[in-house]
Image 1 (cartoon, rainbow, N blue to C red):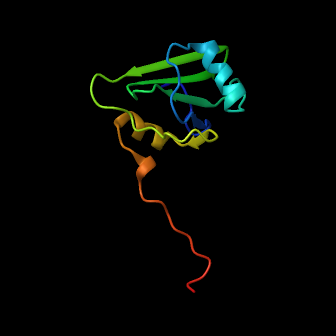
Image 2: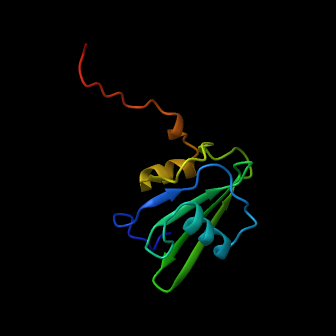
Length: 116
């Protein structure tokens, strides 16, 4: 991941759990069929297992796929349980996930149209 230009790449997470036995081809199919994105277009796709101890990141780099894996020995990754459509996050939020910071449960901004 150190070779990516994070100012030009979008990060998409797959909410819910993913079978971590899947490798590049299986994850690319999930990206295309379930998440409705083209895995070759330059996005970074993030998956997590049911126990939230394993995280995989898939991305296309110039002439082939890269697959990055992190397994926690203690603790769990913060991860959305909602299986709605894929959600885009930024690099700062990806770093928070990797550091264990649960921004999914953070206070949400409230926007009102009027005060009455």
